[in-house]
Length: 436
Image 1: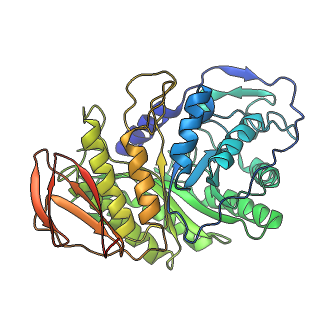
Image 2: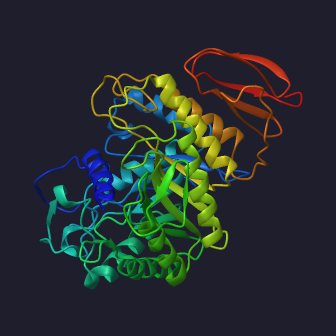
């Protein structure tokens, strides 16, 4: 339990930007934006980003254009929450809607050739025991709707779907926020699934082509098992069985689902990355395999993933190298969708793991990595194992392209896919195959 709450507090601390109580003013009356249809793509892109508190729409116009180019040169998935993470309260009072911020974010996604995804979280205060017309942002990420308002939340989800008919993919809620039951020391999967089923039904009534997924629970692990005996463990640690139980309950009692979605970190809650920063990533593959088996092979989505321990002091080169190895694990294990939590900041300066430099522009390494994987490893491509003479060089291939990463802090020379290559410390290199 301590590990779960430490992890939850860490993530909440990063995301909870607003404090105090915001009073709703006049409700805007602008019509819904006219959004272009997402680009027609041969394969599902697999890779994408989640817009967070600060994103391209918060930048100067020249940086907006750069961000649009970075995200749109190879169309990828772009995800936005309906409340928080850069947008205001969509329904401050019952029946009074305010989609100004959502409109702005969805308009940018459309303008940058994104395939839009919406996360249905969080809920207006009046659905959570708060006062209509007011928003207490300090509690936005910690409180779930009350049971008597599950229908209201489902109605809000349907209203969002009507506002944005080009959006065909929805994740329901985020990390079981507010669904932890301290009395039983477990996740309240029963309440979540009840809410999920109402949302699923409401969205399908709006458009049967809408794809809906859950339960979006965070799957944590420890080196020392601190809860019930777990059915999933490896050299990277032991998964908390309570998270697995929540997924299994949802699978058994859901009204329907088009995909199963989770998130998590390579780090254990008590020991960081074990046995090391790269080997720990196999945890993602183990969880993905378990999800596919338990769900009768539903498509697996990772809504978020994290690989870097707090205060790691990693260089950007190492950070991107570890991320490259993580993406290899996702592709190799058959993940359908993986959304990168984009950590853009408000002010200019160092922005670890960001896609562009805030306020000043300039593409950063993670953007190129995501674009490369989106281009060469979409969900429909056949992934191939590639021979390497040195285990320090991790490799993934498909018919036309190979990507390799040096997982060491020293230069490495190796034979990869029959060719001699030399990689700088933590270097990522792409190489054509088959005459390409």
